[in-house]
Amino acid sequence: MDSFKKKFGKRVKELRKKEGLTQEQVAEIVNIEPPNISKMENGLHFPQPENIEKLSKALNVEIKELFDFSHLMQDEKLIDDITKELKMLPSNELMYIFKTIQNIKLLRK
Image (cartoon, rainbow, N blue to C red; front, side, top):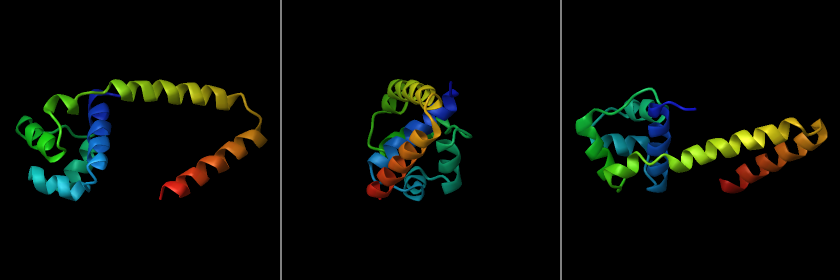
């Protein structure tokens, strides 16, 4: 299971993308250096208490929403379940699934 900082970072990244903001834009609003946003999103850094409120305002959410990880844990379980299923497939079916995923990624761009 991910650490608290990693879950917090995933949540910040998710909310930032939902708002259509870059790391640089969030850093400017919060008044911190852009690399600190990257470190935060990667679970390597946790914001200073005085920056949590600024972060929530930048992301247009209440503070408590920054700490709502319940859906992330569901995603982790789903990934584990998918991984278990993939391990049981023959290689030709794995290649088909891989190509399908690659095509989906191209469509999302």
